[in-house]
Each structure stands twice: as structure tokens, then as C-alpha cells.
Amino acid sequence: MTHPTREGTVPWPAELAAEFRAKGYWEDRALGAYVHDTADRLPEKTALVDGAVGMTYRELADRMDAGAERLLALGLRPDDRVLVQLPNSWQFAVLTLACFRAGIIPVMALPAHRRYELAFLADLAEVRALVVPDRIKEFDHRELAAEVAEAVPSVEWTLVSGDAGPAGTPLEPLLAPGDHPAGARARLDAAAPDPDSPACFLLSGGTTGLPKLITRTHNDYAYNVRVCSEAAGLTEETVYLGTLPASHNFPLACPGILGAFFAGGTAVMLPSPSPARVFATVEAERVTIAAAVPAVAQRWIEYQQEAGGTQLASLAVLQVGGSRMPDELARKVRPVLGAQLQQVFGMAEGLINMTRVDDPDDVVCTTQGRPVSEADEVRIVDELGRDLPDGEAGAILTRGPYTPRGYYRAPEANERAFTDGGWYASGDVVERRPDGNLVVQGRDKDMINRGGEKISAEEIESLVYRLEEVTMVAAVAMPDPVLGERLCLYVTLRPGAELTLERVQEALRSYGIAAFKLPERLVVVEELPTTKVGKINKKELRADIAARQAALAESR
Ligand code: OOB
Image (cartoon, rainbow, N blue to C red; front, side, top):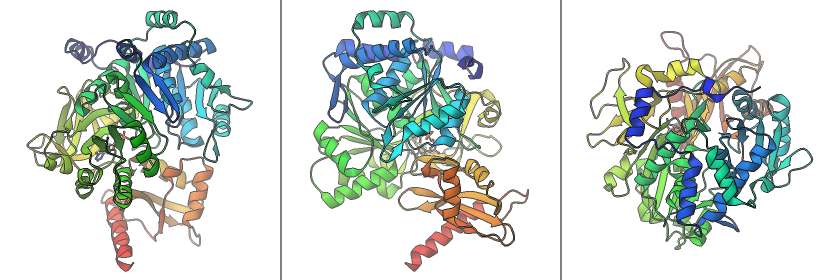
């Protein structure tokens, strides 16, 4: 038996929930209902595009309902969890909606995840099904899923997109249109999930050992989508390009593909942000808004500078977030790409800040914007938790109607990350300007932000300690001109032992971790510097690697 999610979820206090309802932030509707609203209003409009596949809203709503009923007929029940590891595709969108509609909870894994992450997540969430593609490039996800299913007893089904193979259940037939849409709709409406129940589990960037699951309820996530759509100006004319991995909060719901569906626009799914494909797709589908991390935006800018041309003519807004965008890069967006920049500083845990499309250039190019909701509370505090005046950098604390009060089944992590009064401490160091806009100055969390993908230092360190050569290890961020940061390992070794970066990478790969988490530089030292209280001094190591990198660049 799997546990009901209620047992591991931290609810908002009742008085606040009542207030969020009274003020209209929480509409007490399940996410699927919003898609039906759009389908009722604009049945023949194109909802979803994936290569040669296009779907109207009528068809999307029909497939969503039929999919929900088939998942239930398979044996899944409301409140069951399923691990979803699909690339950006129409299948990702339809399956996610079908889950929402049935009250089945998708756990949003990344295509890059491997056995180590997937088994951990599947086990923590006690998933009853895995949903994977047949293969991505050369990699066979069916084999990976088989290993995960073997390791995690709760797994009963593996649904496979594409060629399901002997052990898998084919996904596409489950997501086909149904025979009696009106009947399916009525039955699902009657059994709609409680709007305060989890709609999905997002993954935390994580500063502790392993990733944590973030419970997003129908009520809070619907509000997240609505308020982000408003701040990004989505309308029926919107054509949204989903090219960052769609299981991330940013391309999913800020406003993302769900925003496009709520607003009656079109979501275009693209599995890779490579400039040539993105530019061709923007041109072919008349894309009006896209989301990127700074490293991807930089590639698009460079490509446009080299290739020239008018392929991006329809692109009105480029959202950039996930890691700090350098001001110099921000200033190039409009002159080169012809799109208005919207900086987005958000987190899967809730709070989303955006610059607004009509903000002056100074705000758009040098700040990470301000909260999207009037109900977002933000404090900037010093080490003792005292509020700081505008213009002084400190730790950001936040709470609000779409910022949950705790991680799933993680009381210890909750002790640390959620302070008295339910404030979430993201670990970012932020300055608030007098005009209300936030500037991210740095962070006070042990994480490496590799082009928007987050790597927990502790997670990598605990794995490197398995190597017999190693006596001490510290994972630190090293500055990188493209990705912002990459992962560098400092190690001390046993007497006489030797270690190469290749050996570390090979070992970590054999443990089954995602490739983006592999260290890209190894520094062997006699001793690691420590602080007064005897902890490894990472500040000194970060300065050391930055100096080494600078010296290296100098010598070239
Ligand atoms: C987004 O979400 P996560 O959960 O992958 O990562 C959140 C963390 C933040 O705490 C911050 O450290 C960093 O990513 N971050 C930024 C940033 N946007 C995110 N740091 C500096 N500047 C920015 N613009 O990354 C995310 C979720 C929703 C929307 C956008 C990004």
C-alpha cells in the first residue's frame, strides 16, 4: 500500500486559506477545468503543436479526458503518483493534463535524470507507474525504467512513448481521443480532485543531500499560472515556445505551456533549445514568446549575430531566468533579437518575480523584477533575521498564496528551509531597490547553478566519498563564461593515492547520476582550508578556483 499524500504535505494555515479564497486567489477548481474553459470558448483554435502534430482545444480537452479515464481504467487511482520523464512533446502535455484531470500526481523528473535520481524520486513518492520515452538520442530509457522498476517495489507499470518494447505499456493509445467526450467529461467533473490536494510534485534544486519534492496544489498552481500569465501579458494571440525541459516550473507554469492553455494561446513543444531549430520553429509557428536560461539566450544572441535574418520577427517577448543574467547580456536582447526581455527570478518552491514588458530599460536589464502577485510577501533580512532597508543585500524570505509551506515528507529539511511563520528561505542573497525591483547578488546555499540546472554540493560530495582514494572533498562552483557556473571538485587523497577527473566522472556515472551533475574540474590539494568552527571554507575555495580560472584565461 502506498501512503496518501496528505500524510506528507504541509498545508497552509486555515485562516490564510480562507483569505486566499475570499480574495479570489484560490478559485477552488482543479487545473483540468481551466482547459475545458478554453475549449468551450475556442474549440477550433490550435492549442498544441509538436512538429507535424497539431491539436485544437477541442481535441486537447478530449484527449485529456480520455487519457484520464484510461489511466484510471489501467488501475491507477486518484492520489497515486507517477514518475514522468518525457522530453518536450505533445505526449508530455497531454499526459500531464490527463493526470491533473484524474487526480493522479505526476512527479516531474527531467530527461537528463538517471537511475540514482529516478530511483530516489520513485521511492520517495511511492510511484505506481513510470512514464518514459523509448529512447532519446542513443540512450534507451526503457532499460533505465526497468532498472528503476526493479529497485522500487511500488512500481507496477511502465508507460512508454514511442516503441514500448516487450515490457512496456504503449503510451500513445492511452492518450488517444475518446469515443464519448461528453460522458467522459461529466464523469470526471463529478469526481474532480479536491483543489487543495496536490496537482503535481516539482523537484527542488536542493541544497541538502538529495532532491526534495515540492507539493503544488491545484489551487496554488492555478493561481501561479494565472498571475504569471497576467504579468507576461498572455492572450489568445500568444504562441508560447516550450523549449526548456517542460517539467521545470518556469516553462510549465510561469506562465509556460499551462499559461498558453489557460489563455487560449498555442503551446509549441520543442525538445531542444539549439538555435537552428528554435529559429526555424519561431518562424514557422509565428512564436510570440519564449523562455530561456541565460546560457541559452546567449547562444541565440550569438547565432542571430552570425546568421542574421528575420526568422525571429514574430517574437515579442523573451523571458530569461533560472540563473543570474549578466547585465551586459541583458542589454543585447532587444537590439539583437528584436524581442523585449522579461527577466524572471523564480523557484519551484513558489515565489516568481518578473520585470514587466513596459518597464524602463534600466529595470529590465539590471534587475530580476518584482513579485508577480500583490499577495506575495518578501522580506530581506540579515544573519539575525532582522529586516534590512532597501538597497542592502540580505537573505530573501517569502510566503504567499502559491508558495507552499513545506516539502513532501521532509520534516528535517522543512525545519531548515521554512522559518517561523511559514517563511521560505530560498538561500538567495538579494537586494531590493527603492522601486521594488529585486537584484540577485549571490546566494548563501551550497548549490552549483550550472546554466539553470541546480546541483547540490552535498549530493555530489556524498557520492565522491565512496571513492577509496578520497579523504576529503568539497564541491564548489567555478565561474564559467557560458553556463555561469560549472562544478569543480577539491579533494585530498590518501597517502600515495592518485586521482583523475576521468576516474571521478566514470565512478559517478556508474552510480547512475545525471550527466549535468558531473564535475568538470578536479583540484587535488594537500589540505582543505577550514573556517574557525572547523567547517570546510568554501568561500576560500570559490575564490581560489576563480583566481585559477582567471590566470588560465590570462595565459591563453
Ligand atoms: C527556477 O527554479 P528552480 O527551483 O530550478 O531554482 C530556483 C533558484 C533560485 O532560488 C535562485 O537561486 C536561482 O534558481 N534563480 C535565479 C534566477 N532565477 C532562478 N538566480 C538569479 N537570477 C534569476 N533570474 O530556476 C525558476 C522557476 C520559475 C521561474 C524561473 C526560474
